[in-house]
Length: 296
Image (cartoon, rainbow, N blue to C red; front, side, top):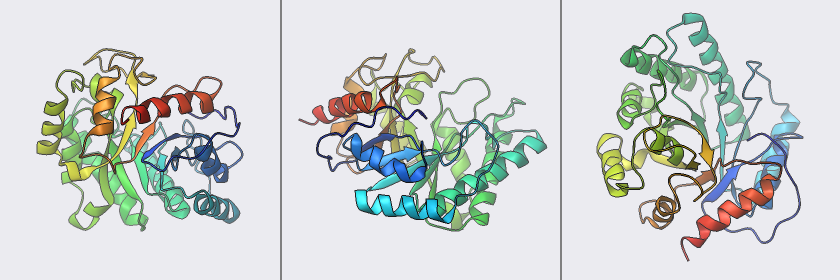
């Protein structure tokens, strides 16, 4: 998700809820233009290198550049994804503390940039104690929210449920949310990744309505603030997180057609994290065009 790809101009921007993860090569201020080049007003980005612990501070001029570019390009929804190294469910005190510090940095940069959401993977309870991992995750998020005031919301992302992951079920996400103090609840929400959901055993192909009924019963549809729209390279219940282009994986086109036409979801931002290859502009345009065609 971090390559720069081709920056050839695209045609007219479409004013809808779709977008994609875009590169920040050359600085975060370049991200809004890259969203426009894929005909989008919505974007996700990294505020730092996702596979490094180093916590950079954004220069004031970089923040100003991004905010100015967002206003100029009329970006509606802007989201960050936190570092892949963060594990707020870790039973190891040193790793947990480092993860909290890293997450505080992510939240602080996101607030400075004026981002709407920070998406976070709940992490892994590597000691096998899931309930303890859920509690640690909630404690870490709480500490970050208390340390960094602002409008940016934290979104728990449903994971593929592999290994000791604590984020691979609606119940786990609800468990984390329930442990966040009442005064911070309005800064919390959920991101559903379609690939992760299918890999975790939620059958969006064969039981689409049942999946959302369960989500409503366990989490509440009002908590759903963002979609990551990705097809899957692996089958239902595989617990493998491998994204594929829309309609070309094991989900196929129908679940995406239903999401795009579901009257409950028209205003929920929907962002691609599909493979970029060597030309992210062309591939993102192709995937976004297909998603838009489902509404025609």
